[in-house]
Image 1: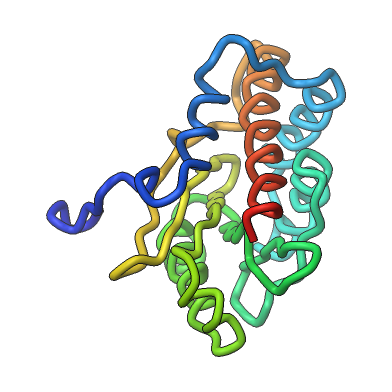
Image 2: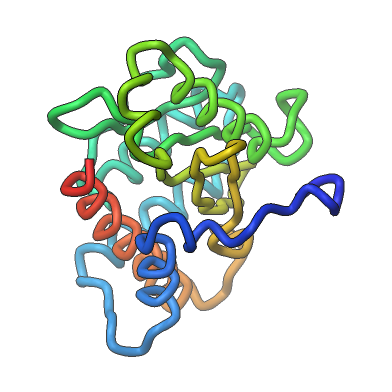
Length: 201
């Protein structure tokens, strides 16, 4: 969406999983499990700490995210600071993540970095067959310090990456339990949608 005229159509018209994700996080009938709330609190605690480097931050938050999403992350894939989660059976990036150590560090916006990394992962030659068969839907997670945003991405005429949540603060909330429950609900919804992506691919 920058500049303003580059905003693409809603990505939910290309794959229903993005609407499902937003329905889950906005609906009243979907509640996180108690263990999800505990894991979300652990994520908040890890995200709120200060780290010397981006690598230290990634090492601290990745296990928390892996637990919340019931998914393994696979290193940096050759990109600075980017980790991604693949399907179990195929080399398909379901979720691409970029984390900057703090807001304003790292030389680029983590959202833009993650969006370009999502594109770069999909244009690799080994994924050409899949690119020709579908719109390559996936999730993109960007973090800067204790702030997290979840985006959706598709490849149509161009690659489109759009935010699906507001920027989620993980620190400085006096009502820790309420915030942990809210973050857990969002992450549980993302876990469900990632599992459904497995079936799609």
